[in-house]
Figure: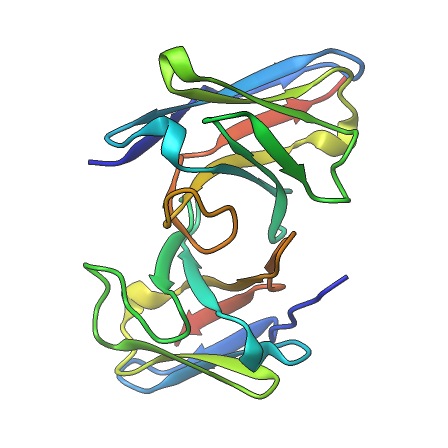
Length: 122
Length: 106
């Protein structure tokens, strides 16, 4: 069974750094891209970017370029999303999701993680 | 940037048909998929490649896409279908999600 299991909820202060994770199982981690999607409180889904763990090729949405960093560790089948300095406006649920087609960056997400709630408050 | 517009809300009586639209420039030239998201849960894919249903998705969910509009249709709507629905498309460099539609089963 294909699964994406995300790290737990985080409470941080503005200016702090954060790295959340998305552990994959049930498929060849290096053969599928992994995307990240933000959902702010009471709002819709926003695509942030996507990474190919096979070679770490990364594509960012223009809205998130320079605001976050995506990475992946092939040895433990885990993708990461990190911030160097959080802002209050980063408070949201962050989902990782796997596109359905192997090696294709852009198609539809058939598997989603359970989401990681990030709270940023002084 | 490319935008997909959905009505904020749709109301439907149990057993009736709900239609949710997704509008974008020349959207019929792209593939569209649809996600269902219930409160406190992750999105679930219900339609992909305009008309296809993933395994486990009930037959009452169907999709179409032509011109500038894609449509998700829920036939014989049940109380369990009450949720937010998002369309999504992509081009060579970007994923785009629709603005989302809250379906209420009255």
